[in-house]
Image 1 (cartoon, rainbow, N blue to C red):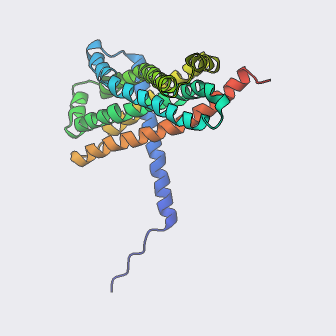
Image 2: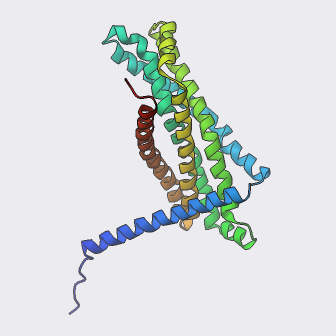
Length: 273
């Protein structure tokens, strides 16, 4: 009579999961260090960079611009509903809308759109190259695949997301101003003067720095998922999906910690009396 197979103890499953997490973090850390090392060691050629810059930057302009525009307009509608409860504070709508767009929503939304449009495409493209053994062929030809495939995409995401963030900020500010001043009859001078008083160079620079960090996260996660895609169409599709999900989660988590850090730093540099 055969013995019944007992289920694996919960402690064993926990240790196996912990081991997989540690190995995953080690693998992506090594991948990141190799990318940074090749970026410093040798610059990619212009013929490799320009098509990727076009795909990442130019082709993302419409979706980022439209997203920023309607986010500003939605913020104006929601803010008006709240500020009408306190009529003397209606002039502060500009500061509230533009501050939200420039500090948080512009960088996060631009990065999210890029993670969905560019990150998934990078993971699918590199995953297809992995499945069809094109990456192995590059290695056999003496070409380092990280230098040839990952570094240009990393540079494109890091350098172009700040520009797309500026576009998203501009469109969001214009959309919020149009709805507030033309539809809700907020005094334009009061709207812009309050915004100018409450939003400074610090807010703009912090938003741009955040966007560069988000771009680096998107590039590393998407390229790593593509390089480790499993065989078959299902594996490539899963790599593309995982790249977007992980990038989106990483953007939100890192944004929280950076917001806490920069708020603390601001108070230390310019203490409130």
